[in-house]
Structure formats: structure tokens, C-alpha cells
Image (cartoon, rainbow, N blue to C red; front, side, top):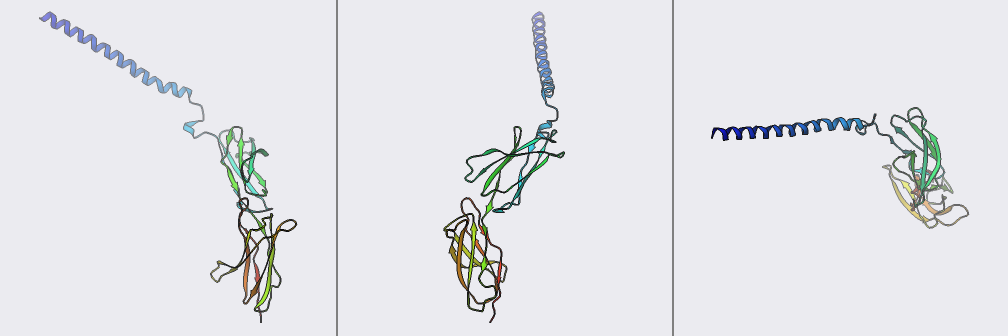
Length: 238
């Protein structure tokens, strides 16, 4: 019996020794894995903090037809100076992109800018190599004018409000608005744009009983935002 107990004890000791060896090997592998991963880690990456990124913004936005907007942004990353920036864009209905509208280079801080005068709503983007910016949509307002046939009418006199809206949007609704005492605007008459040689035109007579400040608003279209005329004053007298 003592001999059998000695044999069982020796067998148990050998089993424990094998387990220690296996566990030790597993721990060694687990310790070595981070070292291998760190060896493959690219310099300057730092968990994504050093990755290159390209920004884009537009100001002013919206713009009135014929005026310009500045598209600007910056390249972040370790290699941001003197990089070629390519401007891309697609006018409404945003189907066909021109992938090379213009190019410029980043300055020492990685910044860049373009000035554009789109004729209708246009989406823009920029790229530096394979780095792409977000897309920015620049909205274009219709350019609207307003004339009064008489800015100092007698009270109760009919005054003709007329002007034009560019580009052509025949049939669009034109609202003649008067400024209220609280600073808001109230529509007092409506008419429609009609065909002309270059732009659409409108005309409507309005009886003036008191002093007032007026403007006209042309309804938006799919490819242009609402247009606002400059303000015009009427000084009614006896």
C-alpha cells in the first residue's frame, strides 16, 4: 500500500508540472503579442489622432446670383504644407460631378481657399490625393429688383411696383410686402413673373394710403432659393 501511494503521488506531481509548463507558455505568448502589435504600429498614428483630415466650408451661403462665395478649409496631419488641393463640383440636379474645376496648394498651416460664382445650387468637395472632404451645398438666390413709379405719391394714389428676376423663372409667384410696425413683413399684393428678353419681369399697381417700406419676394424654385429685392420707401402726402 505505501508503494502504491508513492506511485500515485509521483504521477500527480508530474501532471502538475505539465500544467505549469502549459500555463507558462500561454502567459509568454500573451505578453509577446502586444510587442508584435506595437512593432507594426505606424509612427505618428497614435490611435487615429495623427490621421490626415480635410475640411471644407462656404461663406457666404446662400449667395445672390452673380455674387461669389469663398470655399475654404484645411488639411490636418504631419504633411500638410504645399499639398495640391483639387476642387470638384456638381450643379443642380447634382448628377454629374466635374472632378477638376480648379486646383490650388495648401499654405504652411495646411489652409486653402477657392472663390466661385455658381449660377445655381451647386455641391462642392475637395480632395488631396486620396483624402476627401465632406460635401458642401452652396445655395443661390434669385436676383430681384424693385422700382416704384412714384416714391412720393399722394395718399390714395396708384403706384406701379415693377422689376425683374434673374435667371428666368416665368410663372413664379411674386409677393409685394410691406414692413410692419414690429419689423416683420406682410404681403399686400401678389403677381407672377412673365417672359422677357433676358430675365423674367413683373408689374403690379398698388394704392398707397400711408408711408411705408416695401420689398418683393420671388418664390423659390428647384434650382434657386427665394429672391429678395432691395427695400424701397414710399412717402405719401396730401
